[in-house]
Length: 376
Image (cartoon, rainbow, N blue to C red; front, side):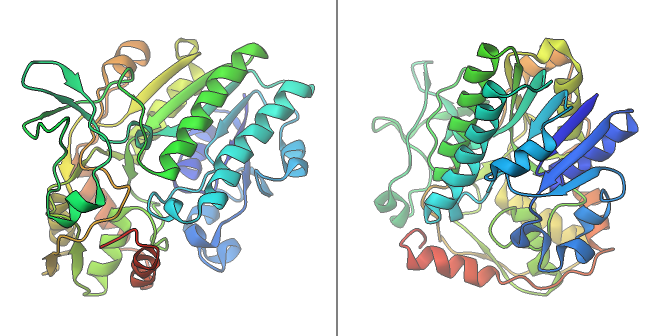
């Protein structure tokens, strides 16, 4: 098939492109080579771009530009729409940028497909676990409940766990695709809207939609230059430069960390299998790992005695816990994650050790949030 990947020079996109090429597909990439991800010299110094540039048809362009879409859509069988702004914290003050790119870029694609003469038969949209907000919990009476955002006052008092109608004794359980959608950040809202637009518009124009709600994706190739998102990259950068790590809250907040190879495998299945058409899937491991466990695993992987400062700092819009229920994707697509967190961290740290890791200005990103009243 002819497959267009927007954001195809990014972490997930470039990894997916290489696998699709290996499977005999023809890949076109539309990417603006964002400095925040690729660095200032992206066309010569970006690891991600270098590994695909001679293997795909590459178009440097922007998903907010109609002319760029019109360059890449003709002749495509599938569009994998990954291009997006992705920083949860950053989205809370760069609101117009996140909505313009994530919602605006998606609406422009759908408008062209609805009104143009294209061969696109399937659109795969990168959604996110962020659309769920806080994860799913079980209350004492056995019912499932969905706690709302934690208040600034509650977080300031050091009460980091969620509560639901005054009940703090909640049991965390896996979040399935039928769980309540209630994002706690602008980023999460934009991903929700992206997903809903694709799943609503595509069937009406004879295009099959597929949405993947990715959990926290990591692995070799992850940008080591972005100070706004990806705690494995941020922590790795600090460790490699012998900087102390500020562990937010109490370090017990958890996420579902899924290795890039597993994410690519799930996405390829969504592209190639008719069973995926019209469906929304979680993509993760089904295992919750705490931030403190991540920091310690990275320190061990690099052989560094890292100073971990558990400060009680917090960011408005962050969630406490969330991990995926994978029942649906296992049953419909046969997807089972194959890389454990221990193996994934070993492979990730081995790759980082081979890279030249320039110190990022992480403090600047934190100060930006503090200046907006979004962090303490």
